[in-house]
Amino acid sequence: MTLSAHPLVARARQLADGLLAPQAERVDQEGVPASHIEAIRRSGLLGLTAPVAYGGSAAPAAVVRATAEILAGACCSTWFVQTQHHTPVQTLAKSELPVRERLLGPMARGELLSGVAYAHLRSHPRIPVRVTRERDGWRFDGTVPWYTGWGLNDVMLLAGVTEADEALFAFTEAREQPGLKASEPMRLAALTASRTVSLELTGLWLPNDAVALRMPYEDWAATDRPRTRNANPAVFGIAEAALTLLDEETANPLRTRLSKIRSEAYALADHPAPHEHAEERLALRAQAYDIMQTATTAAVVAGGGRAMTLTNRAQRLAREALFLLVQGQTPESRTAHLNALGNRRP
Image 1: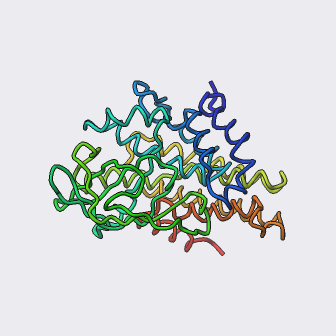
Image 2: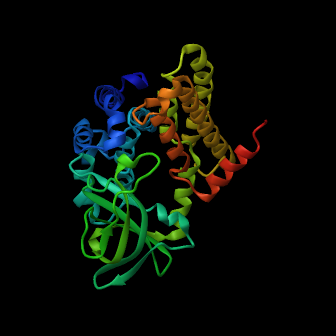
Image 3: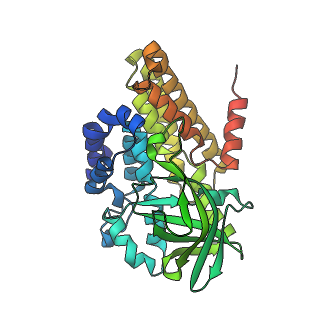
C-alpha cells in the first residue's frame, strides 16, 4: 500500500479538501469552530498514535507525518489545536499510573480532546510553574505562558517542576476552576484562531490519581531534546500548500528541493538512535524553514497586491510560516537556525 492510499492519510486528505482548506481563510479571521473539532473527532485521527487495544490506530511514523502535513497545509490553526492532543495520548500510553485506564480510551477514541501546558519546562532552570506536595495530591503555582485550544479542549495535561527537581505531569479539566484562571485569547500575528491563552495558577490542587508522569527533570529533558531537533512535518505542509499557488516553472525547482530536504529529514527522524546526528538534524530543520519561507514568499510575490488582504491564501500561509519558525523552539534550535541564517551566502 502506498502512503497516500493508507486509510488514515486518505481520511486526512478528504477532511482537508472537503472542509478545512475551503474554510481556512474564514477560520483564520474568526477562530477554529467546534464543528471542525467534531469532524476531526469523527475521523479517528485523534487516535493516530494511541494503542489499538484502547481504540487507537498505532499508526507508523510515516503516516503520522503525512497526516500532519496534510492538515497543516489545509488549515494550520485547526492542525495546531488537534496536534496538542497527541502528546497527552503518548504520555498516557507510556504511563503505568491509574490515570491511564481512566483517560486513554476516551482520548484514543476522540471522545475527549486534550491540550498541553508543558512547553515552559524548556525554560529550566527558570521554573514558571512550581509543584509542591499538598494533602494527598499536588499544588500548582505560576504561569503557563501559552495554552492552545481554550474553549475547545475537554482536558489538559499540565506540567511543572517539584522541589525535588522532578518534572510532574497531571491531567485536569480544561476550564476555569479554583486556582486556575485563563487570560483573554491572545491576538497573534498568526494562528489567533487557535484560541491561545495564558494560564495563571494560584494553588490549583490536583489529586495523586491525576498524575500521568513524574520523573527527574534531567531524565525528562533528555527525552524531550531529540524531538525538537527534527524538522516539523507542518513546515513541509505549509510549503507544499504555497507551491500550489505558483506556476509550474517557478514551483518545480522549489518542489525538487523540498522533496530532497523532506526525505533526508524524515530518514533521520526514523533513525533508531534519536540522540545521534544532532547537528545534522538541526541543519535539516533550518533548511526546511528556509524552503518554507522561500515558497510562501514566492506565493506572496506571485499574488501581488491581492496578497496583502487578510482573506488571501498566500498571505495567510506566509503568516503561518512565521509562526512555525518559533513553534517548539528551544535555545539549541534557535541558535542553530540563527547560525544558518548568518552563514547564508550573499
